[in-house]
Length: 340
Image (cartoon, rainbow, N blue to C red; front, side, top):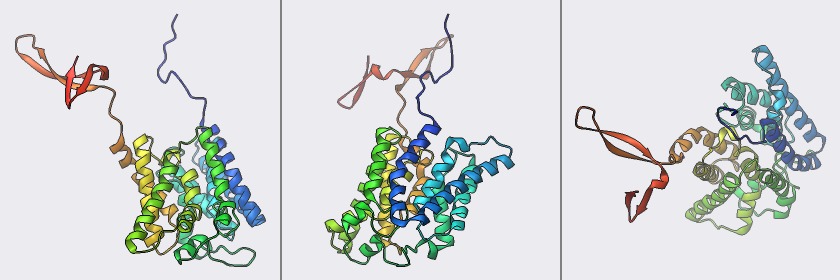
């Protein structure tokens, strides 16, 4: 007796729920440092973002009479990533608006998980940045306002690299500690949730393009400046947790490299030539829109080769048709193809 079934015949043990749970676990060190740095305000914003994201998804699906999907933890991760990108001075109603915008217009109206054309959490952040620019760029801590490390670098100053590494400087809740982000990165790679291709290519290309632009402009390229650009702002957290989103990043190996290079170029242009010191969110969203074109141009060739052969006609003559040959039957030598 044989059991005949359709493909796939081999299934992975991972699921949407397990992947989202791993991403949430990887965010714990980053959010933990944010809570340690900014206190109860960070706790409040994280909680409001998560609750608002889950409630928005559940309410919309209930009203539209669709299956409730909040138990796959994707809404939880969206809320956590949005909280990562909020300054500690943001208000609770901003967190609600950002979460609702990320879940309903960007995610659910386009078909739900896997159908969204851009990262929902980043879309929510950009929505808040455009609507409430002053509040989203206010990084005051305990009533004391100070420039972010990226702003200091843009002004030509040096930054404290140890502070950037540990996380004792102003900024958004989840972008202040490079070491905490790297711990999450190592966890996701070890769990095979992501590959290093996009994060490494993104960070490396950003630094290369920034160095090129500064050299062309006649500005100095110092170790303090380049390390500061790498660890300050949202570059690391964006490369690890946002650029690697399954739905909005390429699936081909070449496409991941091209995607990372495009993000690096856009981020470098925004940071060096733009009016603000940051540009990761906008770079990733623009890159998300280019993913279909990237995948179309980097799709691997089918396993095999096509050859025109002549087939005798029933009543005389020949007809030329296309036939697929196994890859093993084709050998290339000296630029010529020999069939065996």
